[in-house]
Image (tube, rainbow, N blue to C red):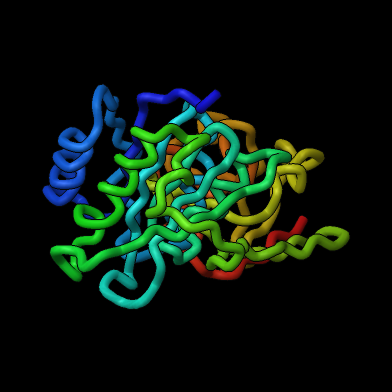
Length: 260
Protein backbone atom coordinates (compact mmCIF):
# COMPACT_ATOMS: atom_id res chain seq x y z
CA UNK A 1 0.00 0.00 0.00
CA UNK A 2 1.22 3.55 -0.65
CA UNK A 3 2.55 5.44 2.35
CA UNK A 4 -0.23 7.90 3.16
CA UNK A 5 0.71 11.43 4.15
CA UNK A 6 -1.01 14.76 3.81
CA UNK A 7 1.97 16.73 5.16
CA UNK A 8 4.35 18.73 2.99
CA UNK A 9 7.12 20.56 4.82
CA UNK A 10 8.95 23.55 3.37
CA UNK A 11 12.54 24.57 4.12
CA UNK A 12 14.63 27.26 2.45
CA UNK A 13 17.03 30.14 2.90
CA UNK A 14 14.56 32.53 1.25
CA UNK A 15 13.35 34.59 4.19
CA UNK A 16 10.22 36.38 2.96
CA UNK A 17 8.14 36.65 0.72
CA UNK A 18 9.33 33.96 -1.73
CA UNK A 19 8.07 30.92 0.23
CA UNK A 20 4.50 32.16 -0.30
CA UNK A 21 4.82 31.48 -4.03
CA UNK A 22 5.87 27.88 -3.36
CA UNK A 23 2.91 27.46 -1.02
CA UNK A 24 0.61 28.82 -3.70
CA UNK A 25 1.83 26.19 -6.16
CA UNK A 26 1.42 23.41 -3.59
CA UNK A 27 -2.10 24.49 -2.67
CA UNK A 28 -3.01 24.80 -6.35
CA UNK A 29 -1.59 21.40 -7.35
CA UNK A 30 -2.57 19.20 -4.38
CA UNK A 31 -5.74 18.20 -2.67
CA UNK A 32 -5.83 18.42 1.10
CA UNK A 33 -2.11 18.97 1.68
CA UNK A 34 -1.11 20.36 5.07
CA UNK A 35 1.81 22.75 4.64
CA UNK A 36 4.29 23.05 7.50
CA UNK A 37 7.20 25.49 7.52
CA UNK A 38 10.40 24.06 8.97
CA UNK A 39 12.43 27.24 8.44
CA UNK A 40 13.03 29.82 5.77
CA UNK A 41 15.89 31.35 7.75
CA UNK A 42 18.65 28.84 7.06
CA UNK A 43 21.97 30.63 6.49
CA UNK A 44 21.89 31.99 2.96
CA UNK A 45 23.44 29.64 0.38
CA UNK A 46 24.96 27.48 3.15
CA UNK A 47 24.16 23.96 2.00
CA UNK A 48 26.03 22.22 4.82
CA UNK A 49 24.28 24.18 7.59
CA UNK A 50 20.86 23.43 6.10
CA UNK A 51 21.79 19.75 5.72
CA UNK A 52 22.75 19.59 9.40
CA UNK A 53 19.52 21.17 10.63
CA UNK A 54 17.33 19.07 8.37
CA UNK A 55 19.02 15.91 9.64
CA UNK A 56 18.19 16.98 13.19
CA UNK A 57 14.60 18.17 12.57
CA UNK A 58 12.93 16.07 9.88
CA UNK A 59 13.06 12.72 11.73
CA UNK A 60 10.59 14.15 14.26
CA UNK A 61 7.88 14.38 11.58
CA UNK A 62 5.36 11.69 10.69
CA UNK A 63 5.54 10.46 7.07
CA UNK A 64 5.78 13.54 4.86
CA UNK A 65 7.03 15.05 1.64
CA UNK A 66 9.84 17.48 2.44
CA UNK A 67 10.45 20.33 0.00
CA UNK A 68 13.93 21.81 0.50
CA UNK A 69 15.38 24.73 -1.46
CA UNK A 70 18.85 25.90 -0.46
CA UNK A 71 20.21 26.21 -3.94
CA UNK A 72 23.22 28.42 -4.70
CA UNK A 73 23.49 26.59 -8.05
CA UNK A 74 20.04 27.62 -9.28
CA UNK A 75 20.03 28.10 -13.05
CA UNK A 76 23.08 25.86 -13.60
CA UNK A 77 23.13 22.28 -14.83
CA UNK A 78 22.83 20.81 -11.32
CA UNK A 79 20.06 18.21 -11.27
CA UNK A 80 16.74 18.33 -9.44
CA UNK A 81 16.07 15.18 -7.41
CA UNK A 82 13.48 13.40 -5.32
CA UNK A 83 14.64 10.97 -2.64
CA UNK A 84 12.61 8.18 -1.07
CA UNK A 85 13.78 7.59 2.50
CA UNK A 86 11.73 5.16 4.56
CA UNK A 87 8.21 6.58 4.87
CA UNK A 88 9.34 10.01 3.68
CA UNK A 89 10.24 11.70 0.41
CA UNK A 90 12.49 14.71 -0.07
CA UNK A 91 12.53 17.04 -3.07
CA UNK A 92 15.23 19.58 -3.84
CA UNK A 93 18.47 20.35 -5.67
CA UNK A 94 21.17 17.74 -6.16
CA UNK A 95 23.78 19.55 -4.09
CA UNK A 96 23.89 17.27 -1.04
CA UNK A 97 21.41 19.21 1.09
CA UNK A 98 18.91 16.32 1.19
CA UNK A 99 21.29 13.45 1.86
CA UNK A 100 22.04 13.56 5.63
CA UNK A 101 18.34 13.92 6.44
CA UNK A 102 17.42 11.18 3.96
CA UNK A 103 19.85 8.78 5.59
CA UNK A 104 18.46 9.59 9.03
CA UNK A 105 14.88 9.10 7.81
CA UNK A 106 15.65 5.83 6.01
CA UNK A 107 17.25 4.14 9.01
CA UNK A 108 18.37 0.68 7.90
CA UNK A 109 16.48 0.88 4.61
CA UNK A 110 18.21 1.94 1.38
CA UNK A 111 17.83 5.50 0.14
CA UNK A 112 16.45 5.67 -3.43
CA UNK A 113 17.12 8.72 -5.59
CA UNK A 114 15.27 9.92 -8.69
CA UNK A 115 16.15 12.70 -11.08
CA UNK A 116 13.29 15.05 -11.83
CA UNK A 117 12.69 15.94 -15.46
CA UNK A 118 12.95 19.71 -15.82
CA UNK A 119 11.27 21.14 -18.90
CA UNK A 120 12.04 24.81 -19.53
CA UNK A 121 11.04 26.36 -16.17
CA UNK A 122 9.49 29.81 -16.28
CA UNK A 123 12.42 31.31 -14.37
CA UNK A 124 16.11 30.44 -14.14
CA UNK A 125 16.34 32.07 -10.71
CA UNK A 126 13.33 30.63 -8.83
CA UNK A 127 13.29 26.85 -9.20
CA UNK A 128 11.65 26.61 -5.79
CA UNK A 129 8.46 27.86 -7.38
CA UNK A 130 8.89 26.54 -10.93
CA UNK A 131 10.58 23.14 -10.43
CA UNK A 132 10.66 21.87 -6.87
CA UNK A 133 7.18 22.87 -5.65
CA UNK A 134 5.44 21.27 -8.67
CA UNK A 135 7.58 18.13 -8.20
CA UNK A 136 6.74 17.96 -4.49
CA UNK A 137 3.05 18.27 -5.38
CA UNK A 138 3.37 15.36 -7.83
CA UNK A 139 5.06 13.20 -5.20
CA UNK A 140 2.32 14.04 -2.71
CA UNK A 141 -0.50 13.27 -5.12
CA UNK A 142 1.04 9.99 -6.37
CA UNK A 143 2.01 8.75 -2.90
CA UNK A 144 5.45 8.42 -1.36
CA UNK A 145 5.71 4.73 -2.28
CA UNK A 146 4.50 5.16 -5.85
CA UNK A 147 5.63 8.48 -7.22
CA UNK A 148 8.28 6.79 -9.39
CA UNK A 149 5.45 5.43 -11.55
CA UNK A 150 5.37 8.99 -12.91
CA UNK A 151 7.65 9.34 -15.95
CA UNK A 152 8.92 12.65 -14.59
CA UNK A 153 11.05 10.70 -12.08
CA UNK A 154 13.97 8.56 -13.26
CA UNK A 155 15.95 6.38 -10.84
CA UNK A 156 19.64 7.34 -10.57
CA UNK A 157 22.59 5.98 -8.61
CA UNK A 158 24.76 9.08 -8.88
CA UNK A 159 24.02 12.07 -6.65
CA UNK A 160 25.93 14.67 -4.67
CA UNK A 161 26.54 13.86 -1.01
CA UNK A 162 27.61 15.82 2.04
CA UNK A 163 29.74 14.22 4.73
CA UNK A 164 30.32 16.04 7.99
CA UNK A 165 33.95 16.09 9.17
CA UNK A 166 35.10 13.35 11.54
CA UNK A 167 36.60 14.47 14.87
CA UNK A 168 39.87 13.15 16.29
CA UNK A 169 39.75 12.06 19.92
CA UNK A 170 42.89 11.21 21.90
CA UNK A 171 43.68 10.85 25.60
CA UNK A 172 42.82 14.23 27.10
CA UNK A 173 42.17 15.97 23.80
CA UNK A 174 39.50 16.15 21.08
CA UNK A 175 39.86 18.03 17.82
CA UNK A 176 36.87 18.96 15.73
CA UNK A 177 34.99 21.73 13.99
CA UNK A 178 32.08 24.08 14.59
CA UNK A 179 29.34 22.85 12.24
CA UNK A 180 26.71 25.54 12.81
CA UNK A 181 25.80 28.38 15.16
CA UNK A 182 22.15 28.59 16.16
CA UNK A 183 20.08 31.72 16.73
CA UNK A 184 21.08 31.86 20.41
CA UNK A 185 24.77 31.89 19.53
CA UNK A 186 25.36 28.31 20.63
CA UNK A 187 28.27 26.89 18.61
CA UNK A 188 27.47 23.28 17.73
CA UNK A 189 30.50 21.12 17.02
CA UNK A 190 31.03 17.72 15.44
CA UNK A 191 32.44 16.33 18.72
CA UNK A 192 30.21 13.59 20.13
CA UNK A 193 28.64 14.36 23.48
CA UNK A 194 30.19 11.21 24.97
CA UNK A 195 33.46 13.13 25.17
CA UNK A 196 31.97 15.03 28.13
CA UNK A 197 30.37 12.12 29.98
CA UNK A 198 33.12 11.84 32.61
CA UNK A 199 33.85 15.57 32.76
CA UNK A 200 30.61 17.01 34.17
CA UNK A 201 31.34 19.79 36.63
CA UNK A 202 34.99 20.02 35.63
CA UNK A 203 36.84 22.72 33.73
CA UNK A 204 38.10 22.17 30.21
CA UNK A 205 39.79 24.38 27.64
CA UNK A 206 38.47 25.17 24.17
CA UNK A 207 41.21 26.68 22.00
CA UNK A 208 42.84 27.73 25.26
CA UNK A 209 39.68 29.30 26.76
CA UNK A 210 38.59 27.79 30.09
CA UNK A 211 34.93 26.78 30.56
CA UNK A 212 32.93 24.56 32.87
CA UNK A 213 31.30 21.37 31.61
CA UNK A 214 27.60 21.45 32.56
CA UNK A 215 24.43 19.58 31.70
CA UNK A 216 22.32 22.74 31.38
CA UNK A 217 22.85 26.44 30.82
CA UNK A 218 21.52 27.35 34.27
CA UNK A 219 24.28 25.36 36.01
CA UNK A 220 26.54 28.38 35.48
CA UNK A 221 25.84 32.00 36.36
CA UNK A 222 24.35 34.32 33.73
CA UNK A 223 27.06 35.58 31.39
CA UNK A 224 29.37 32.64 32.11
CA UNK A 225 30.55 30.26 29.41
CA UNK A 226 29.98 26.52 29.46
CA UNK A 227 30.54 23.40 27.39
CA UNK A 228 27.53 21.12 27.23
CA UNK A 229 25.79 18.38 25.25
CA UNK A 230 23.10 19.83 23.01
CA UNK A 231 19.80 18.26 22.05
CA UNK A 232 21.50 16.99 18.88
CA UNK A 233 23.93 14.92 20.96
CA UNK A 234 27.00 16.96 20.02
CA UNK A 235 29.31 19.11 22.14
CA UNK A 236 28.06 22.69 22.22
CA UNK A 237 29.87 25.88 23.25
CA UNK A 238 27.49 28.23 24.99
CA UNK A 239 26.99 31.10 27.41
CA UNK A 240 24.14 31.26 29.91
CA UNK A 241 21.99 34.12 28.58
CA UNK A 242 24.67 35.12 26.13
CA UNK A 243 26.28 34.12 22.85
CA UNK A 244 28.79 31.31 22.86
CA UNK A 245 30.14 32.16 19.42
CA UNK A 246 31.16 35.63 20.60
CA UNK A 247 32.68 34.59 23.92
CA UNK A 248 34.57 31.58 22.53
CA UNK A 249 35.50 33.55 19.39
CA UNK A 250 34.29 30.93 16.91
CA UNK A 251 32.19 30.74 13.77
CA UNK A 252 30.84 27.90 11.63
CA UNK A 253 33.76 26.15 9.97
CA UNK A 254 36.33 27.04 12.65
CA UNK A 255 38.54 24.27 13.98
CA UNK A 256 38.47 23.68 17.74
CA UNK A 257 40.61 21.75 20.21
CA UNK A 258 39.01 20.64 23.46
CA UNK A 259 41.47 19.60 26.19
CA UNK A 260 40.99 18.34 29.73
